[in-house]
Length: 71
Image (cartoon, rainbow, N blue to C red):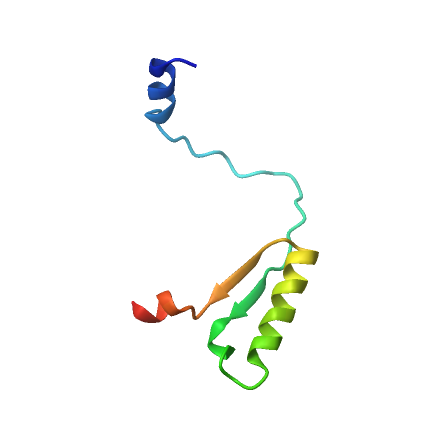
C-alpha cells in the first residue's frame, strides 16, 4: 500500500452499518465494582469475578474506578 492509498483510507468518511436482522447470542457482562476493593473480602471477590468473567465470557465492565471518581 502506498502513501496515497493509506491517506485515502484514513480520511474516508465513516458510514454506519444497518442493524443486523440475525438472531445473535449475547453474553451477560460481569460488572466489576471497584468501590468494593477496600471492603473486607473485596479484593478476593473482585479477583474471583474477574477470573470468572475472563474464563467464561472474555469481557467485563468496570464501574467506580479511581478515574471515574475524579470527574
